[in-house]
View (cartoon, rainbow, N blue to C red):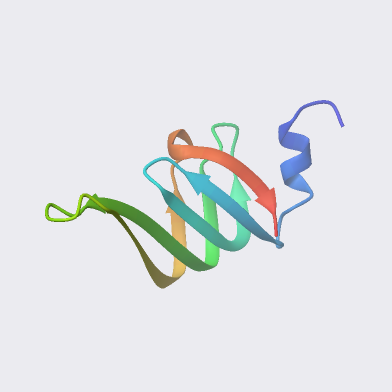
Length: 85
């Protein structure tokens, strides 16, 4: 291995975890990637976490929304972390 992206090559056709900007998380099968970390993921589970402050109680309310996506193109500039599941 000569470069950090060589490690990602070992994850082709494996399930990966992708932490993205904007409190978004992806879990899916890595089909392809490039030097910018643009990726094609299949069988994706996307989780979006949002927090709100209740006006009456000043409590923080955390909401998680999950959806299934068959195939997804992930633009590399939103990726914060990439790991194996």
